[in-house]
Image (tube, rainbow, N blue to C red):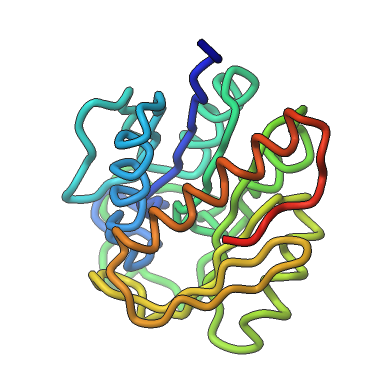
Length: 220
């Protein structure tokens, strides 16, 4: 029997705290990450699931809960080489406060600006350090969806990227474009469970192509 494929799925948002009650984050619900996990489990593969704070977590996975981008990055660096497929659906916050305050900042002492520094690009790290592995990214865009996603696909050395708009946040149904080196496939207004199965099927095909020495992904 061939070795089971081990998936690393990054899901949910990250929270970057300014003080104990204020933070920088986004509206990611974790629904797509959960749907991807369910699709992988139905295939009988193993999952390491790293998630930021959400209200839903998949069962029957190795679950690692994190809060910040740096926490997620630390876990990824310790696990990545042991996995076959990494899917970065997490909406990692791009920036964090340069300084985090131990106590709540009083309103009358708040300034009009907060100094920020950039968080690590976790999925780019995976793409640049992969060895016979598949790395899948997600691109949330408000304009030039396909062109921006293709640029990320190339610059981050990804095998597949899934592009969607802000309407995906928190929704059960969404529209995405699944993009590889030679294919752009649009899936319109479908449940995330259906989309997840399409993504996983294509990801597995790409992985098998790599293992067999092929480098051109097949159509979804």
